[in-house]
Length: 231
Image (cartoon, rainbow, N blue to C red; front, top):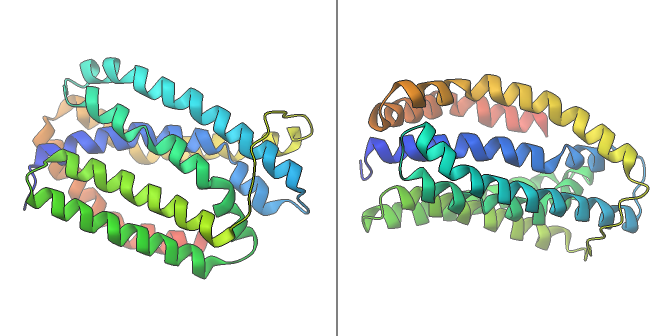
């Protein structure tokens, strides 16, 4: 009621594109950490360094792609929204190893608590900014706030100093395992979000916004239950 449907439409396209890059960024290494029989500190450092290296490349790629995507979807605001939301790529990277360690240690209560607190604060920020007339930027700031807080809380929960190492020798098995999972995730992600990309070309921003909100609300029960089952 506080935002225009077009605001949701623009953010939906940006989220769909960047969400795919976040999947590639993790490279399935979070699952490799969870499933490893044993993990040494130096292996965690190398995995952390690898994730950060990938995130730097994907962040640059995402920012550079904003010009093409803005022109392709005929949405001028994507030129600014995509670079801003692309910050979630390195932000997620900073907390990805710690989040995987939470799951590995079956500390799911803490993980869920972190997600709830971050989501609540992020939603509150979005609401305040929407009241102040920030438009689509209230959604963008809310997303970055939520992701940043979740990474910070995950790091605090594990509280292990992991210094990134950029010597990737000895982690080939983790990378192979991770990217095999990533391939499956990307196929599912494209299947699940192809409608957003297609409709972004066929509908105007307002129509896409109405569709994206309805789609999100309809999928809430399944997404929440799925997250619990996956953990």
